[in-house]
Image (cartoon, rainbow, N blue to C red; front, side, top):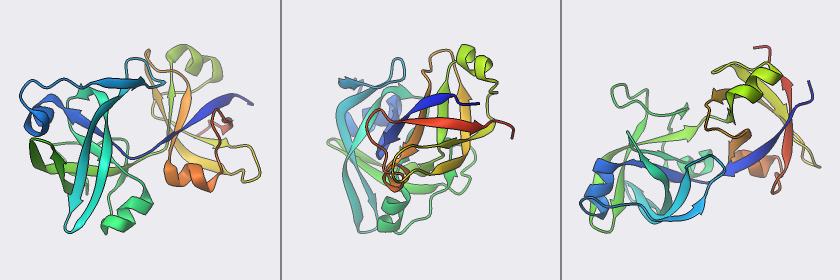
Length: 195
C-alpha cells in the first residue's frame, strides 16, 4: 500500500460546550469564526481562553468551533511538562470516567471554570467511509505512516477515525510535527493497516 495522506499539525486548542462558553463569555454567547479548518463545518474562532494550573498559565489558547457536548483542552507533551502535569494520551475525555485526565482552570473574559479536562490528543487519521473502504481501513483500527523529508520518521499507533464529514488527513501535535520536520501540505505514506 502506498496511499498518501496530508499531514496537519494541531497546536494547543480548546473544544467547549455551550454551557461552559456561557460561563466564561456570557449567556447565549456565539463563537466567531475567523478561519475554516480542513474538516467540514469546523473552524478556528476569534475567542481564546487562558489555562491555569497552580502558578503556571498558558495564555490565548484558541477555541475551535462549533461547540461540543463536552469541554476539553488539548496540549503537547512539552506544554504538559511546563504545567508540571501528566495528562493522558487520549482521543477525547469522558465526563463520567476521568481516565486520569488532569483537571485545570480555564479563564475567559467574564468568568472561569475549574473542572476542564486536559489531554494530549492521540495521533489520528480523519477519513471518509468511501476512501477508507477503498484502502481497506476500519474505524478505530491502528495504522502506521511514514513522513517525507530529511527528518523522515514513521509514526505508529495512528487511530483511524471514520466519518462522512471527514476529509483524509493525519493529525499530529506540535511536538510530533517538529520532530519530523513537517512542512505545510506535506504528506505521509500509510505503510501498515494490518493491526
